[in-house]
Every structure is written in structure tokens, then in C-alpha cells.
Length: 313
Image 1 (cartoon, rainbow, N blue to C red):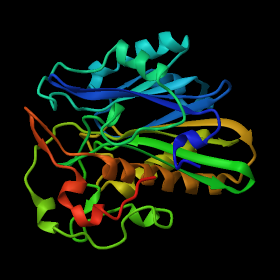
Image 2: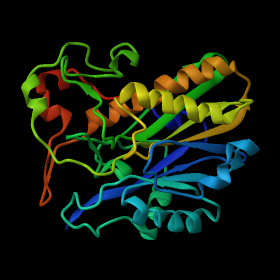
Image 3: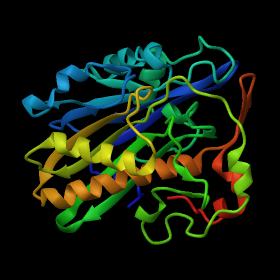
């Protein structure tokens, strides 16, 4: 187990990252094996999505070969064009707002990044300032892309990948620990109260539009796939407080390869925790970045001794 969404058999992940020359953005492609069904749960007042209506949960989901998560807000959704051409298949997408964070407001992913992300897809998953997490910002702290997974009885696996780019914070400033850290596996996340608490209260850039986008996947056969996407949104609400605001466009895709029977309640509980854990990894894997837009301080810069306990996935 890699503690990644690619622990779900047949799922692959690839990134295209653009950092420098005015850019701080990227695209992530999540690919599925043939026969995978997907649906989506979109919440908040400012989503940026493509072809999500085709995944209408009233019809039980639709077979897809991949999903694109991208920076660039609505402009970045064109990355799905390249992914679709590369896969020769329908590819829904969701975007987060990172415009201008590299210094150039017009630097955003396009079809080339979508195609590159598909070509780079594999089982090893980069995290932090990569792909859709390259320009992510969580409140005033650098956000990032994270992944996590869990194995359930009977060979069932639940995994998630998510980009943390929320208006609401994910760190309790009274303890210095991520809100969702208690959901971690033994030794997965720092457990001691954070140091340097004053550092986390520094002023940062006010953000007009932020969002969390991600995918939860499983090999379990589920009677109601939309409930899996809803469980991911529950995990988001545990990790980010508040979530689903008017300036958020929180979007969670759900995918099932349907190869294993499982207890639906156990799978949904696992999905809730796994999505939250993926967001914590995105926070802890992120690195500080300085661009013409400003300095984006990462968790590990603000809480160096606490972050030193983190050993990654």
C-alpha cells in the first residue's frame, strides 16, 4: 500500500506542473480502468466545472476513463480538452482558483497540460506543489495536493486525492494541528501541539474565490454511488472549517470500479476519513513559495518543529 488513491487497482495519476515565468499552477489527471462508474457532488457558490451534468446522480453515474483536476479557474478547464484527446474519451473536470499567484494572471493550464498529465500517469503520486496543487492556497497558508488510502476487509480499497485551496482554514490556531489530524492512521500525522503559534497568525493575501477539488475512488460495488461523493464532502467539512461557502466551489468526484462486494456503510465511513486525510497530506507536503504576487508560507515554515514529526505517506 502506498497510502495513495492508486492503491485502488487500475487507478493512475499524472501531473503537469507549471512553476516560474509568471506561472504557479498545474493539472492533475486521475485515470480509471474500463467499466468504472463516476458521479460528482458540487457544493458552494463558486464552482468551476466541465461536463459534471453528465454525471448526474439521478442516473446512477456514468462510465468514465478519467477526471481532470486543474488550476486556472474556468480558463484552466480547457486542460480537459487535451486529456480527452489523449484518452479518446469523455473527461469531466473541476478547476480551482489560483490565477495570478505566480505573478501573471493569464498563466493557466491548457490542453497541453491536460495531455501531459495523462501521459505521465502512473501509480506513484507526487504531492504538495504539483499538478492542481501547485498554486493552491489554504486561507493564508500554502495549500497543496494530497492523497491517502485505506484497505478494508475482503480486498476492498478506498483512496482519495484532493487539492487544498479553501477559504476556510484547515489548522486549529490554538493547537497548531490540522483539524483532521485525529483521523490519521497510527503515526501518519504529527500528534503534539504545534509550536510557533504566533507565526500562523501572520497576515496573508485575502482570497476572493477558493475551492477544494478531488476524487474518491474504490473497488467496492455500491448501490448508491452519489453517497460516496457525499462522504468525501463530509471529510472536506471535517478538514476545512468552514466549508461549502459562497466563495467556494467544493467539488468531489466519486468513482467505483465495482469489482468487490462490500458493506456500504464501512466504505462511506472510510471515504469520509480518507478524503480528509488526503487534504492533510496536501497541507503538510506543500512548500513555501515566493513569487511577484507575494510569499506563500507553508505549514512546515510556520510550524517547523511540529512539521518535523511528519514523515510523509
